[in-house]
Image 1 (cartoon, rainbow, N blue to C red):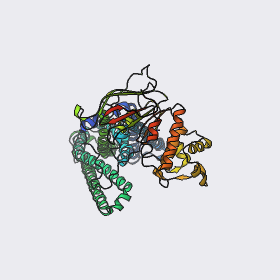
Image 2 (tube, helix red, strand yellow):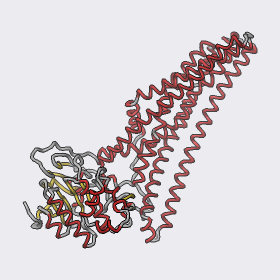
Image 3 (cartoon, one colour):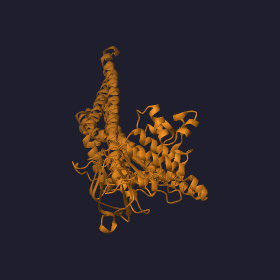
Image 4 (cartoon, rainbow, N blue to C red):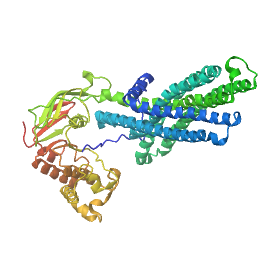
Amino acid sequence: MAEPDARNTSALNNGGTGDSSPAPLSAEVNQWLQGLAKTHSKSVIKTAVAGLFAGFATIVQMTLLATIIHQGLVEKVALTALTPYFLGLLATLGLRALAQGWQTTLASRCSQQVRQQVRQQLNDCWQATGPVSLNQSSAGTHSREWLDHVDALHGFFARFLPQMLIATLLPLMILAFVFWLDWLAAIFLMLAAPLIPLFMALVGMGAESLNQQHFQTVSRLSGQFLDKVRGLTTLQLFQQTGPASEVLQQRSDQYRFITMKTLRVAFLSSAVLEFFSSVAIAVIAMYIGFGLLGSIVFGPAADLTLFSGLLVLLLAPEFFQPLRTLSQHYHDRASALGAGAEIFSRLKASESTGQRVRPAPSQNSTGVMVQDVSVGFGSGFSKNKLLFDRVSFSVGRGQALALTGPSGGGKSTLLNMIAGFIAPQSGAITIFDKAPGQQAFGWLGQKGFLIDGTWADNLRLTAPQASDSEIADALAQVGLGPLLAERAEGIYSKVMEDGQGLSGGQSRRLSLARILVADYDLILLDEPTAALDADSEQHIVQTLSKLKQQGKTLVFSSHHTALLALADRVLQVVDGRLQATAEGGHHD
């Protein structure tokens, strides 16, 4: 199992985690969102159709209501004769409620499908980037991307996109009906309608920028808070808890300030839109009132009746309602663009850092093959930035390869490339005739990855079906049997996150036991005996010796004499160059 063993804790850095890349152009983000919408266009259209059906039911409802009032007050029709209209009104109300419920269900389903696709894109992006490059960003930023940023797309696909179709078609339906009733009132509606989208766009441009700042600020704040919590012990040792608290307070105030600015824009836009729609409805109400009183004789005003005038007045708010609803959901679009900018930055960055060489399987390879691999770090790719330049070596199946040499020479980089955590710029790597990452393997880093749970929970991360006896046997093989016997709960004894409560050697051996119970054919180890006591070193060396006897392929970096003697081949790694040494059991 690949264990992400490097935690980037910037506890003493008052600037916090600066892992936010420049936001891409809004046009690119909008194009990405439109691509998602096109993929799920059928779901969006179904949601809009449900909304249109609810709008049509509203037109029928208002027509029946105006008919009942006109027949009862003007025509003096008996209530018994109006019973069919009342029943029709109740049925229409029921149909409208069902249509609205159908619209909500379809909208939630559409949003869920889109968010599932985006999370899959993020998962593929993180997998392609690899844990080494991914660790340059804080876990707080990643969790915000996975949870809050993706959830911020909900309103855009569930409400805004369907409402755009509804706001285009439903007002046209109402306008055509009103034009049939009174063309002058329809003209009033036509003149007032463009004002709402105009001011909606003007206010929305500011909201889009603020929402993007909002998501960037909260991402940085999440990363900084997590860094400070992880490094709390270090901060206390260096008496830096006070300055760290001040930094978090400043960042929190900045987040509060951006949030309040966003809310002010939202309230301002709502007030402006309500004002224009109210003025338009008031103008139509005055026209109908004066027309019914006979004060206006121009055009169709002379033919106004209580039925036509009341129906126009009832439909006027419904004409503006889709536009007003769209203006409310316009902030969903701004939120989606702000969150989408962060997600798109991550996906776009992975295109350059996560490009992996996928060689065709070689029929001659039976183990690990590294052929003409070059890798470098930093921006760009040039000769003077290469750590390794066209290096090659191989490890036969069932053999052990040791990488040794001074710190910083590139041993961990080679292991990370074999594991698939780092993608080389050129060359080919095959693991048992497969590309890195396609073959399950065991990984033991310099710091083990342990979760808050029991010993059994940690071992079952790699082997969920492992029995209690298999777990106990694996623990015994790494020399944890006596310690296990002292625990009343046995393999169900508690282990805190990152192995707190265990010594460094015990934690490392527990991680090694997890590899044993999973029974991997390839095992990669990065300094497995570094900073351990003699007892732990002995148990790890013995365990690796048994694994080699079982035919497992081992690749490890180490300076430990006993481990180097275990290897069939030892490579000296110095400043990106590989040299065979005279150490090891068997040599090429």
